[in-house]
Length: 108
Picture 1 (cartoon, rainbow, N blue to C red):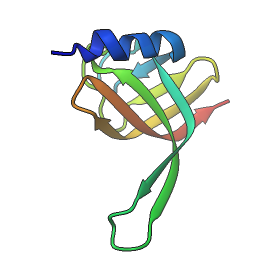
Picture 2 (cartoon, one colour):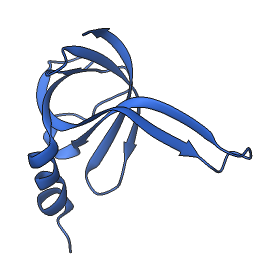
Picture 3 (cartoon, one colour):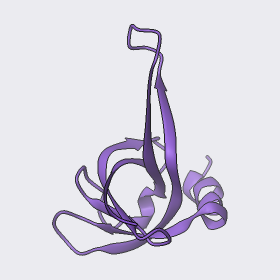
């Protein structure tokens, strides 16, 4: 069986990851490393219309790096940018990776 967290996610975040801080709506902030993309483009080709495209910032992290699962409304501060985002949706790939789709909150 493949250990996705150790063999895939860990090395990817080790190469492309950058520091951030997640501040839950309740609880203490914690540091995490993840892959940030300021303009992730999602395309929905199954909506019944030709396609719906949305662009938003995302932050990909290992679920195992979080003391508690991030929730909608939690804040994510990308340290390099000094910008804070709020999590609007979480996509779990089933192998230990969480894609946090976010909205701009403040900073920068």
